Image (tube, rainbow, N blue to C red; front, side):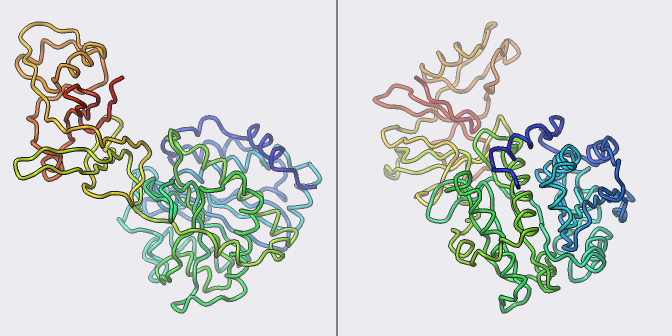
Length: 445
């Protein structure tokens, strides 16, 4: 009997490859873990090179099982989207660890799974979306100018999968429709023609998504959305649907304080295993399209890293309140991405600043050695200083907070217009209660 979710979770924890908990996965990571894999039964688990990238890096595929239902998965066709690659390598370890268990044996007597953990090794090496030609592989389905796209098309033609899983990462700035909450997982059953027709294979993809989400309703409640299904003949998911494949697009989203998307990695694994189960026993056919169709839409650019709401700005041209959205450049700096009435915009961190006044802040002149610890910095902030001048070399920097030398701006728009990381103070009754230091939001207790 297929394990319950909690048991499947425990088995996953044993199979999870700890070394892949990192921000990016490179071709050598895939090669290393495929070399370490134990292919003791070549009739059950097979590994082969199915082609090469534009720069002649190998593209690997693993095939598992002996069943009559062929399933194809591919990941990292965008080189900077590595989350599902880790999930597929975890899946390989999981299969090896459990291949003698009756439920897994029975599953792979009904299906044969083929998966490509990294379709775009050149892009992965360069940490770019595109391949080494500069082409987005997922916009190459019509003309097939990329060797990687040709490899994927050959798998469609030769394997003739009944089902396919097209695995991606999406920007962390998507939010749930009618909500300000981030999207952790997004799905799509892509259309196969410009009429967005509903042939059986596309209906089956919708039913499969609904079945999986039903199994994971507690886990994903309020965190899952679907893409708009407009057709593109350049995209491989749409091509798959046009060829009679039930194609499921899964996009890994973001969870607060999960920089390497390890929870999305786990969710990918669970979605794939539950999907295999529903395909093998045909239970997806008992699910209507309603569960999929009722999903909220995935809203692009609906989030930012921080939102400061209602900040009061005193201007010679009149006073006003403004919402400020900040997006990170890196872990130390951010830029203003939008100003104004941002009620439509969610944030991973939100500050209610309706009682705070904007202040450019003063400049502290350094003319003697200073140990700039966090406590010392806080002392300066409370006394209205957020910039430094003079002999900066005399500062012994003992905090990660930046030493800011650029002049202030009379209002936030000055930083936005100059595309500069913003720095200012926030006052309540003329006392400093908060600061923005090159986009880093600091609330003073």
